[in-house]
Length: 126
Image 1 (tube, helix red, strand yellow):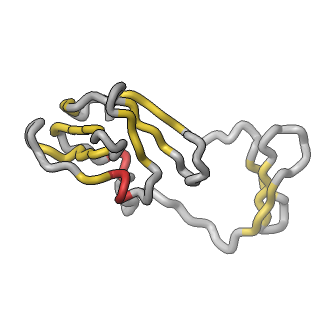
Image 2 (cartoon, helix red, strand yellow):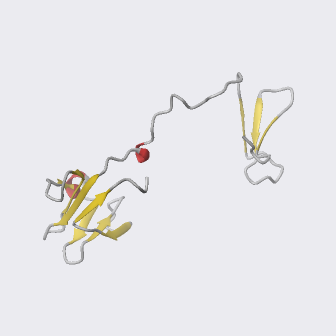
């Protein structure tokens, strides 16, 4: 594979030089002990690549508890308490179907979004 000159080697040594911005100065270097080829045949599938078609459900309880499950056979399935399971990182507003994520639990919302109460994922976007 072409590297556009980002990866080079130092002649007579086992040193690889990496120049990310191609300014002529190595940003990183490391040594290798042998030559090998990796055909990636033993790589595990990434979790992001796995998709099972099915329904997802979400609900915001009156107290701001975010209930969720994305592995359902229909819109009528049991949901997990995502607020409790995340240690309080996920909460919601029942009046707007908006969920909030506070990743570091500092009281400030790090991310938010609206959710539907039921949806179907056919895995066509994976």
